[in-house]
Length: 580
Image (cartoon, rainbow, N blue to C red; front, side, top):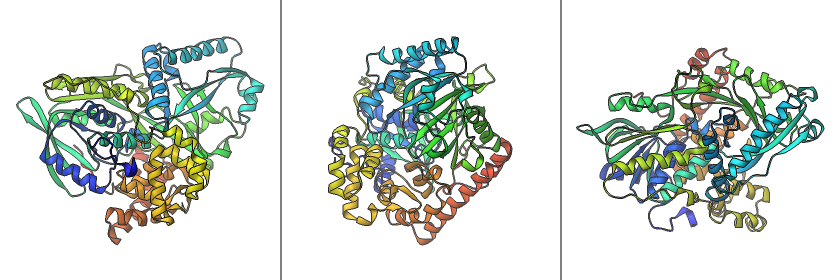
């Protein structure tokens, strides 16, 4: 598809400024079958599921797409090996089935296999116990008839494990099992999911907040929205509304006049990013902790290490990582490393909130990761809980509930058959990457980078570089990325601000020692003409980004959550959002 144009005439996969303006106009003029509140992984999944069933769809997001939980995960597509211990076999089977679909059919350009080494500390019983669990894990991945998409697990002696991961402390384990899961850039996946929904006709806008619900008696008949960039309000009429707002579920429910049937608690998870050379290993590593597990995850030229699992009832928009969080992660990973990591080794830190269904347990690590769909009042569907890997199942269940509330027959879900934009033909284009390198003048490593991030839509970026050769240069200070990617984020991917680009369309904010401060000016100057910024706005964007990074750095030196939260709150969003 050239320039992201739709082959079916329904829409365009572009999410640029013009498309945003068109979507806002249509939202004020039409009645939609479904309005989705929330632009994270679940909301995006609902929009695509509904659109591919032939329903008219509008989606709104108060901040940037995936700016909450969906950009701050462990970036894994996995069954949840630890849930086997809880005997939650159905959740694991469901997640592994989805993993197979994502790897083989839905997003082969975005989801990739990744190995993990599980070091063991007991010679006999643990190998039998963990080995049986991993064997079951592999078996469940095949039980639904979908391709597993990853190699089978293998047992390793300590000597063989040390060849795979020389950085492991020899006396910290007695042997290991290596198994495979998959990983994804979570925020990029959401962007591609939304672009696919737009391809099938969904109208999608960010920086637009639900400030109230339209009612006819007991029935919800739409949403009142506020465009936070123009401060204008619009009534969007809908036959059904879906609340897919994750940790904000209860807040949105209060706009309807009550908390509703579903209650969500937030659990904070903190991850550290360190350079690849700090840990010598050809495999990811998974470690047991007293509460859960800790992952050491390969991430390009870096490792992602996490996560924590602690209750959080402070600022949901910007959960803050404290010094205690960072110390916790370092302490647990250092228990198995022969060269310990220090605070000076940490390039990036990010904190996210898991939306856990509230239960009887006081410990968030024991609350359910399964999802719930409810119809608390006529015209309103709520979907909450779950995990990133099973977003498609959550979306299907939510749209099934929508279909129940609509007059007339709605077709069943078909998203298990729908490749995301950039996915169709990906393998063929990947096989032609050397030819693309020769024709474009870019090194084959650059072509591979683009293909893994954009799939076949990488040809859009190559066309942009042919038109503007200066965009084929790396960004100064973050040379993993090309200048074209900054421009493309604004013209095609819905980015509205420097922070959107450096934190989510790219990962410069966690992959560079200065957390993107050096890049902010070049990025702002590339974005300015595409987004119509004045010189004043451009400077404001740079200033805001620098202040955000500074506040996060200071918050990460505070001992506890209260102090870290107070520091992080000191920097307002560049587009102020309101509390419902």
